Length: 439
Image 1 (cartoon, rainbow, N blue to C red):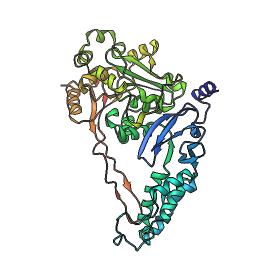
Image 2 (tube, helix red, strand yellow):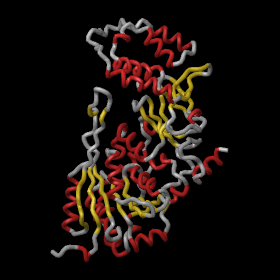
Image 3 (cartoon, helix red, strand yellow):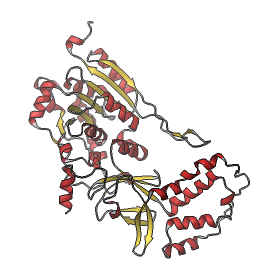
Image 4 (tube, rainbow, N blue to C red):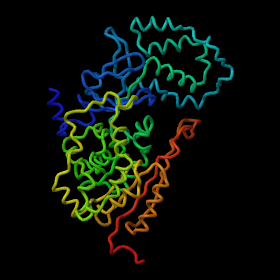
């Protein structure tokens, strides 16, 4: 049955809005306090606090569903939470009341005597099978200062206790935005600190559209490759090139739940295979740089090593995921003759100019290219060299600015904690010899 379901999924017959056995999901615990990826199957489990819960109830539910941890006769389990319950606990009903609030917390003293419910009482309630929501309500009822708090403080207290005694899990669908946000928040170094707004700008500058053939040098564990393949939708190739003998790992691609048709369009080919014969015989710079510095070996070792944090736990390689096969010979010959429709370079550990001077000539004429780097100086040097060599026009370096705001009655302000930078993009258009301006 599981094999049949897997085949149906990969052939595109399943509803992409519903989870299925074997799919990857992004689990958002307590509104971003903890995020992790998991592959749903009968034996998969998640540890929340000191409780191990099976992920079986998540199979067959719509993406966007919420679950909470309850305790039954057979131990802790995940039960689905309806929209009405979520609204009550998230304080949506308080928005209008806060405007009329006239109380304040100046008279409250935090001396640990306001709560009459002890830890032993809570443990006894748990042994009797009392739900987390009931424990939260009991804590509120036994708090001597709860009624004296402002409505805003009351809701903060409720959410704090709910996260401890009735943690919530939001089942999110893994796609480019959610994956990038999760990695940037918890493991930014894995994706070169590429922020989601920079990723969206990168895809737009590269003109990634259906029926495009996109050349990608992706050393961000496959995030760029997956984002490009997602936008292509199986109509067009994304060719992941590499220096040396070993392709760069694209572990993140398997989290996208791509169909077989899309996976077949994700291929790899070495730089030497893509270069014309006359150029490949004389080209030594990029391979020599990597061989001398062992950058490629270090990168492969770091990115293929198992992670120790929650973000990539429970991910197991599936037999049905076949993204990253060798590019067909006829496709390679076509790219040699006609060039690629766009180029994306995301290799923060390699020299930007050394890569660009090898890959930009592989584009068709008037095709766009984008180079991402965490820092500005390597791109500035690359931009200067591209101008000097007259290889491109419309060169510019961009930095996007993203700032999230909290918008609530009487308390609208930017979030206090935010990233200073999401990286830089060097963009341009390849030109022919006839398009070069006279010296």
